[in-house]
Image: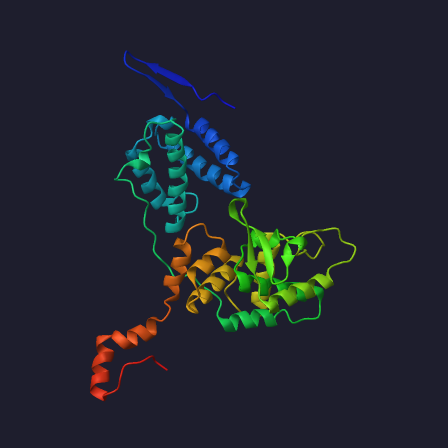
Length: 331
């Protein structure tokens, strides 16, 4: 590993140690690895922060972490919001927020570790760019039924795919959680999964889903030594890529344009919220650390909004007064 102290500037009053951005990033990643972050999360931190370093070098910005000021951060945000030469496209608002929060975490760590005196993100003039709040797509109940019917064939793969789709719709677990699930983790009407940040949790599963998974277990090869719950067509552990391809194939067979593993997670969450399910329960099942994401699903579901509108809209009230009818839920 490179030495932290690369340059020493001395005057009569202070000693200022300057640390190249690349060296500071190495130390940041080591600190995060010690915190037991997943390899995927570490890779994400590394890639985004490396992009910041490349931008600084290519645009004549300071190369040492102590020299980065709020003005440099503003220039970087403006760069992210513009078109990129390689793709001639702009980053999405959500991607820009991810970049911002990742680099902010790096500099905030540097301040906490006393590598810098004050993070440039501490300035009240630096704010995370806002993103347009879009309604997340989700499968309708009819589309879920169509997807399951696409798995009604007689083969072992049909049995496996039906069990997988039922589990995703029933619990909203992540693709990695499903693919890493072990046989020993399946218990009556619940499954233990390894969530983000190496945090285990139990997710409840409906009796119908439990029966479908146990039916699938009986179709697994008897001579396999694999301990992973769901296997690929070749007999090895099912990968997230294989899972995505399966859903894409089944969606195409069902005539559904929507596809994607995470879409199943959104589907579970939005249908839960629309049915007025408790948000703290949704948070626990999905494995969210904070309630913010669960509350967002609740807002997107707009539970009961039509009934409230019918009761309190001034136009509805005028119509009720004219007809002499009481306001009530629409039928």
